[in-house]
Image (cartoon, rainbow, N blue to C red; front, side, top):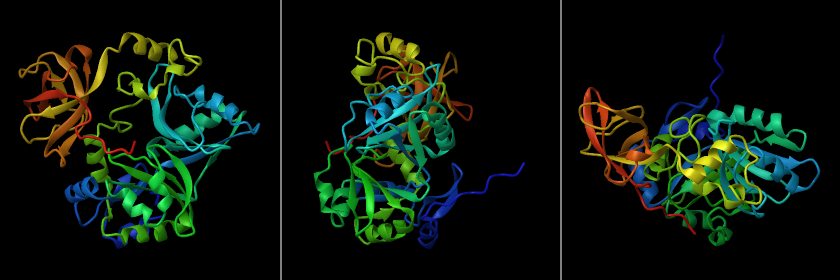
Amino acid sequence: MTESPILKTPLHALHLSLGARMAPFAGYDMPIQYPLGVMKEHLFTRGQCGLFDVSHLGQLTIRPKSGHLSDAASALESLIPVDIAGLKVGRQRYGFFTNEAGGILDDLMISNRGDHFFMVVNASRKAEDIAHLRAHLSDVCDIEVLEDRALIALQGPHAEQVLAEFCPEVTSMAFMDVETDDLHDIDCIVSRSGYSGEDGFEISIPAKDAETVVRRLLDHPDCEMVGLGARDSLRLEAGLCLYGNDIDETTTPVEAGLTWAIQKVRRTGGARAGGFPGAHRILAELDNGPARLRIGLKPDGKAPIRAHAKLYANDAGEHLLGEVTSGGFGPSVDAPVAMAYLPVSHAAAGTRVFAEVRGKFLPATVSALPFVTPGYRR
């Protein structure tokens, strides 16, 4: 068997010209860091504004064949346990596909664009998500994959200031607003959202115009290119899940602490309760609580505790409790941080556990998430 060729985003040549260190990620050749370095890129994003190429993510449109958006909403609610029918035009929601066991097939963002829904899915699950949608919704909806668009993210406290110089209209956008804006005569889909814990925007751009838009944004002194290395440390500090690490087909939304994304109308007693894959387990866990929970961890000292480290009840390695799903050094908090799943009995903040790292048992304390105060524009 031959391996699939590595894919390139519309900004690939720009990354090379800027001296990025590239590496394969989810089938794409992606920038891991730039000459500035992961630590400085992370801190620049927290203090000013980082620009990320996230064009590897999947961008889709879902249009009702009937012309009635409510038909597409009902169809999507059969796969996603969130309130899509109540999503207003120009608004976006976080959601996830679930399986019959209540596990998460992928997490996603979905927005109401008036006559259709616009969806962004993870790169690692793009093919599976497209097949899933077409298998279940093709009788009701037309699903189009937008292959000719790039996607970038501007993240940080100066993101509004940077983008407003090109498009003043964005200053009136609230968190999770979505609109079409003109960036130098280029129509772009702009959402006020992101994956860093900071205020910011995600911008879908026609592929042919992507480098032009990015270079103009980078002309601003408060804007720097940031790679996937800092994107990961930023999202970890913000307590945000990475699919394949912190959530997957074996984790339920309730275990993962994502209950805020399941609105009352889809819960027990709600007008459209259930009706999605795995509803029996997810609704039961919402009502009665799960057996385990995703939690934050603060290791003692400066040594990071990485993903897959086993967690025990004592420093003798007795009573296996769970394992770390994401871990590393948090530049903004100047300390190692991690996330893991633990039994509810050990999930309270302040609980002490011990991580096995190279034959030693390192102490860590269960912590509330996130590790940094979110900077979202409410």
